[in-house]
Structure formats: structure tokens, C-alpha cells
Image (cartoon, rainbow, N blue to C red; front, side):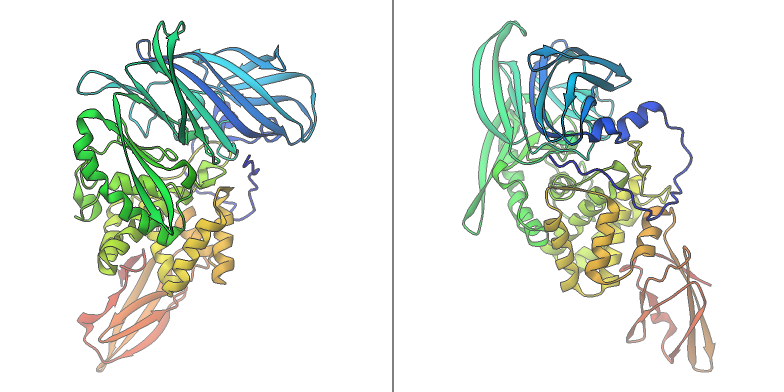
Length: 549
């Protein structure tokens, strides 16, 4: 029911993203028109028959339970054009509907009154989009395991949940809870989000086969792109994570050949959860449990059923230089971080995905500090600099389903690391991070809300700080000169950045530390006598360029 209509403040009106042509299809997907804001989804009841032979969903349906927020007789839901709608039911009658690209306009025979609760049931089928490069270019992955058994999953962040099931496909509206029921041939297992409520076997005329029907229930709000399925020859094992005498179930679903290695490899989950809970508060989906499910692609943060495909290797596909030569599984770490950043806290518009990806990538940094210490953390976060392209702004285009640069990951993390050192008091910083996680738990937000919250809590005006890092391609440059006068040195310094940028920065010289407050105007500082070779701008603490003039 988390339908928070995005309010876009006049904050940062000019967006410098490179020119791009957008279509009506983009607007229909990304824009919150009155046909979408007039109702609030309460509950989805998704029923799927999955035919791996024809690579299709057959005889499937979704019941959309909603509350009217305004009077209306027409709404928009979303389902990809290549998927066929057989009928839409309301109060045991078929509704009229029409399509406009992936948008589906539904007409009611009477006016729906504000605050009324109703449901519609959409019957549909078809061959959903096949993933070209999952999870980035998503869709269904129809694969086979090493024993030639079907191995199927879906990933649809950005691509859209409406590629495979009918819904209000916008991040701003999440149901309070959801049921996902899957029917597959009896040689396979169907796994989804939340907890398994029941299973039954029978002969299905739809699939012309003996089948297993598995019903999964999600008891928390869930965003559309996190709804998922996994189908395969899985084996299950479990563990428990205990905190303050409360027990979190840890469930693992892996291909049968990988059971032994998975039991050893997944031992890193509990120490990771302890670190994350220390920084961000209690695991947000406690009653639904924590699960890793082996997937036929690299990974995805599917809520309470995380897709895992890193082949039981350290680093990123075995590349440990990506994680600064440490020894942990990057995919487990990063996708679990999303349970707090992206799943619990979800942005209204994907233009603000830096909240998901920047904070989640920074969660890796804090994990390293938790497990390996401050110095290793400092090395790890600076290792992220090699991933930054500074190609375009991190902020995307609002109302068009258009996200910003992939720099939202590493540059977003480095921005937060910089902010920690701007605040310059770790007790305040760690409290701020935890408070954001707790106060915005299970909420949909705009990026400007997070920025305002940080401004209010720190009592700092960080408007220009965020504008520089989020809305502009380049990072700030500290320009400086060292001038010798006899045995003494004078430092001249200023920022080359957006107008009004005035971030403090730290320097070392000799045995001294000094915090400068540069502006766009040259300033002078008498440093006295020291060994010039010891002069250092702390660009390991602040993500900046340094230009000695």
C-alpha cells in the first residue's frame, strides 16, 4: 500500500543529463498520471503455470487488490505488448480494456468511489521477454543445469515486472503483502519470495503433466522488480541466525551437485548479517526469512530470495582485485546489502536509484571496516575509484523510467565516504546511517527527501555538496600552489567546482593536520617551515581531483 506520489521539489531544477529522445512508451511506463495515482495497490495474488517446453506462461492470472484514492472509472495497469490478456474480471463480470504500448487501460461499468476497496483479476499468458544479458538486460533465463534439467529464473530491474506479470509497474506503489503461486512439472521445484505456505501435487490439464503447485507468501511490502521465481532441480538446506534470543531462518536453495560447496561457502552469511545489523539495524524481512537461491545469472537483490550466481567464488566472478584482494563473495555481500538499501528503502522513481546503489555499494565499505579494520576499509573504498567513469550525472530523468549513470554505484559510495569525512565525527556518522535505514524502513522516498533528512540531522547545508556529486558529471578539483618565502611555505588553494561549492578538505604537512575551507576564491595559509615532501591532500578521505598549479 506504499503509494507515495512522487513530489518533485524545485531542488536542482536543471538536470545536465545528455540529450536523449524519449517516446510515449517511456512516458507511459515512467509517469505517474491520474490513471495510476487514483488507486493504491494493497495486495497481489499472482498465479503462474510455467511451461519450460514452450518457454511460456500459460493459464496464468493476477488478482490486484486496491483501494481507490480518488473517484474514477478508468485506471492503467501494465503488461508487455507481447503478453496476451484473455480477460479482466471485476465483480464476476468481464471488463473492457484497451492497450497503448505496454499500458493497459481498464474501464469500469460504474464509478469507483474514493476509499473503496476492490479487486480485479487479470487472466493472461504468453512468452515473456527472454533475457539477453541478465540481470542488466533482463527477462526470463531459460537455461539447463549440468545434468540437463531445466533451470529457469527471471530478472527485471529496469526492464520491468510488466514484462512477465500484470501490475502497476512503478516503484512508487508497493503492495502491503503478496502471494505467488507457481505450478511446474513434478520433477522440478518452484521457489519464490517469502515463505512457502503449502505444496500439492496433481495432474494439470493446462501443462498436460503431473505437477507441483507451490504457494509462497510475502508478508512485507515488496517492489515489483523484486518479485521473482526460480525453477530447477533444487535441494534445500537451512541454518539459523540468532540475535537477542530472536531467530532468523536462513534458507538456501542450490543445485543438487553444489550442496557440499554451498554449505561451506555460505558460512560467510552470518558474520555479514551481524555487520550489517550493527550499521543499519535489524534485518528488515525477519518474518519472511533470508534466502539465497542459486540462479542461472550473476545475481539480483530479490527480496528475501536473493539470486546467487557467483559460482561459489571469492570476489566478482573470481576476480578478487575487484574487492581489493580480500576474501569474500562480492555477490552475496552486495545483494544482501540491498535488503536494506533498495528493498526496504525504495525510491519512487528510478532516476533516484543512487539511493539504492550508492548506499548499498557503501555497505560493502562498512562490511570491510567491520571485518578487517579501518585501514583495509580505506584501501577498499579507494579501490572503487577505478570503476568511476564520470560519463554523465548520477541522477536520471524523472517520469521517464530513465536512470542515471552507472557511477551511482562506486561514485555514490565514494560520495558517502566523503560525506563521512565532511561530518568528521564517526559517532554522528554511524548514527546518521542507521537512523536513515530505520526511519525510512518500508517506505518509498524521493532522493531529495534523503538529502533533506541528512541536512536536518547534520545541521549542515549540503545542498551544493549533493548537487556537485549527483547532478554534475565531474567531481570537484582542489587547485593549490605552494610558494616558498625564505624558509617558510605559503599555501594558496581554491575549489574548481560548481558555484557556491564550499566543502572542507583535510591536508597533512610535516607532523600537522589541517582542515581547509576552500571556496572558488583563492585563499592563503602560512604553513611555516616543514619538509615539502610531506605535504599531502587527503584525497583518500575525500573523492576529489587534486591539481597542483
